[in-house]
Image 1: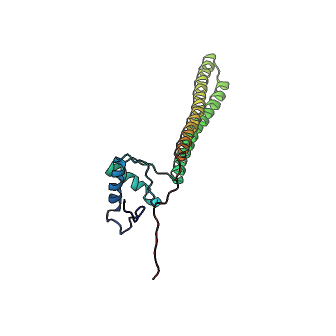
Image 2: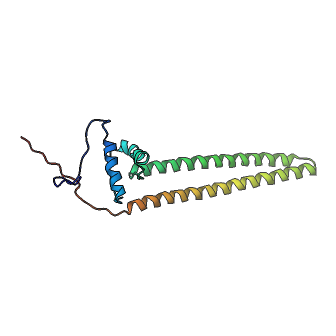
Image 3: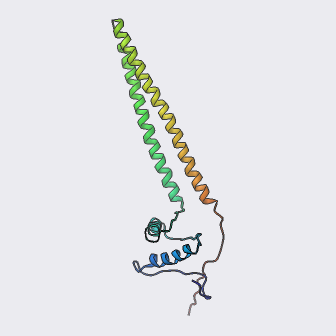
Length: 175
């Protein structure tokens, strides 16, 4: 890496010959020297594998920076929030249905005791429904907060300073 003839290195050979291990050794040395701003560019399909290898084999923390991560996290959040919302809305509809049926039977009740019993049941069902409505409202607030946290995390990653530096130059001659 310190050769006067090169400004960097490319490790390129057959699969399974130890490129990740070689790079990990170099990265570990840089990490030990407190040089912690290291950029590794790998194909998209290898990003998670590199992150895992750096963590498990060399104890080097890393972050994968790509739009795919952001998209995946948003999709997870959207699916979870949609499931939660649909579940709570279904429960509210079921409670509304039970309330309507109980009101019909309350109208048909003959005795005062039966009418009182129906009103108590109605009150309990309406309380449960109101609780579910609050739960739905609170869940939406929690979802919004998670979305804000994710956006903040991505913004923080994007605030890192950018520096353009020539890492290496490839030259070849046609003979």
